[in-house]
Length: 98
Image: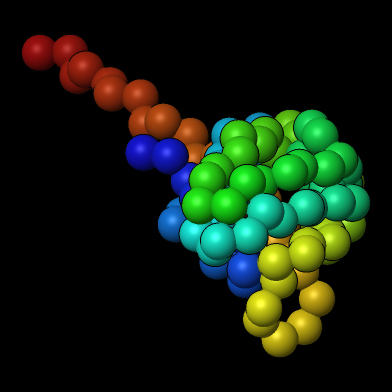
């Protein structure tokens, strides 16, 4: 299931993990410019058109900072994502000898 991060307040549909793909989601009627994302994304800036989404990728080992600039921000404080977590490992199924 895709992960979406709202450009208005950085709320996400799921936890961001190192190396993951997500979408900046812009549910507003105005285009939004995001900048200073190079500390955690493979691209440093994004233009997210009105009522649209933009694909983004978290670095495998993001150094931070995790703040960014955002022309559509409408929440208290500065724009920021939570530091991405290490992805959970898939559990290997072990077969027991009979």
